Length: 189
Image (cartoon, rainbow, N blue to C red; front, side, top):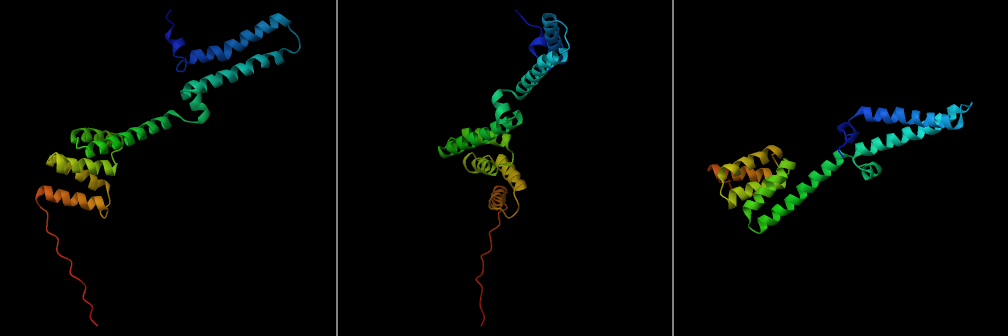
């Protein structure tokens, strides 16, 4: 048996909620009146049937909107769950990427580090490792320069990775200057 769409997708259909919020208490109230007869305490019976029904429906609505009872109880919303999923993907892919780099599986490491950068484009360590793999192992000059430049945009100028990236770009472009030796300080007395 196939149910109508409006009945299956309850959370998006206000007709379903209107039916339960209005019709169920009214129907229950009329049954009660028919059973006990009209007396002076009919308002009491109306409250007995309508208030718990409305509270139960509000509870059902909250559970369905939050995704599950555990989410409702523990306060984890879908947005928090998405962030937790992103964090898991980031850390899992980064750890696997480091392991692949260590095992000299560089193409696999590139794929995994790119997954990390899809989730978090400002992941400094992943971007640096990716640039270094392109530069040193895969000899992909254009990709290495691109990743090093992206890294330099993210980092402040004095950061260690920034200086390393700048030197690597200069090396790749053939502009690497030989640093001048530092002269020792002379003390005059």
